[in-house]
Length: 181
Image (cartoon, rainbow, N blue to C red; front, side, top):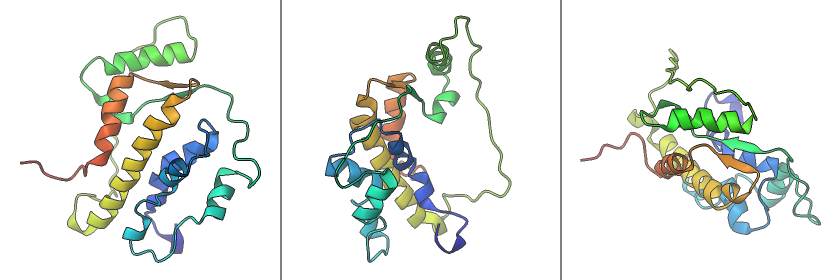
């Protein structure tokens, strides 16, 4: 974050950080653009790119001569945190997926929903945060596309309850504060 801001929207671009695990090719311009928000970065009062190409290569540890280096060899398990709070079979499926992923023979208890209370949190739905919310939705759109088109294609990436996961990813393109009529 610049100028020691307490809120930094780039931190919400976790797909950019996940890309460093090298589970995707990182050779297509479209993929790199999804990671760095080049589709929309000019819409938020930035006169120059937030992440110029040389900074992108450095961040992703890509040399000019070698686009792809060896990736993280381990399997990766992905779930969307809201899957824990669903009132269907998803939490039970999540426990089963985790058991298989960890190669545990005995059953795990169901993963229970929880509520995290943060007394100093802001209400992101307040009008004063509308621009930040739009930027976060743009991050969410790119993250969801990147995960579905690139990350989930890797056979070493396991998805917990894939239908539920994709349905929740699809919701990342909507402003959570928008009212429907």
